Image 1 (cartoon, rainbow, N blue to C red):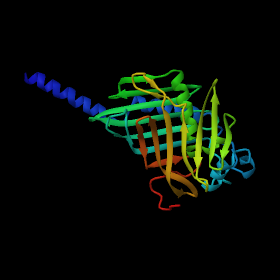
Image 2 (image 1 turned 45 degrees about the vertical axis):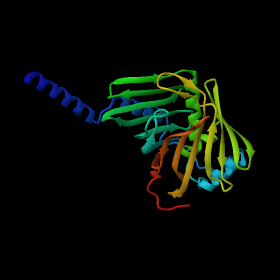
Image 3 (image 1 turned 90 degrees about the horizontal axis):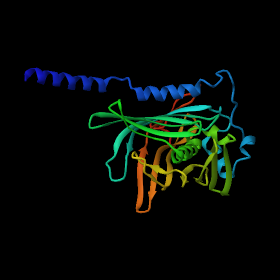
Image 4 (image 1 turned 180 degrees about the horizontal axis):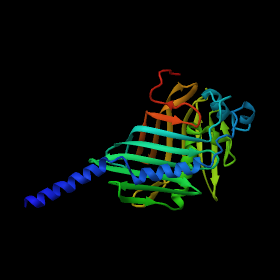
Length: 294
């Protein structure tokens, strides 16, 4: 019996050590995909700066956003590496929130994003990769670094991921807003509709701004909720951007929320107040540590 007990203890110890090892196949997949797109860029090429003249084709509230944020005259960014740390995240309605770290890469020349989710449930690692590339979206969750819990793909996922790229464009990668795959239409002085298109599909949403130019929210009906079991539910989705601060000369929100607007009430399933953005050849923009408030 003591031999069986010793063997069981060794197995448990081996599992615990495996969980603590930094290497993760899921994380490596994220870095491989991000590096693939970043490598396409010409390091020596200049993308220029944001100018007032090129912004004139945009709706007035969007122009005001670029001016309010301080982007005029600053270098354009072909991609961004963004990290949301210590996020309150709800996997599904009725479930308690967990803490996650969420790291992503967005790419301006074409609609693309890849994100890595890192969390722990009852001491067991839970990780995932969300992607939108070449017109296809996917959402994969992996338990204990080896067991794939779900890997959702399909037309609804393609459109949902494309809508997410649109929602993040102004906040994370404003150069994307000037690309031909996003078109704009002014509604009034504080609202504009945007449509993103690629690979035969499109997604639209409405951006809301303050009169001064701060981006307040994005709302869309094109981002279906797709559960781990593949169940699809069409629910209005909102992203909110709050608590602006000036970070390295750029006004940016320090709080970002993602919300499902269910008929019986809103579910804030992603709530972050700690965002770091890194662009090529520039300083990190640390959302959570700035002491200059606007």
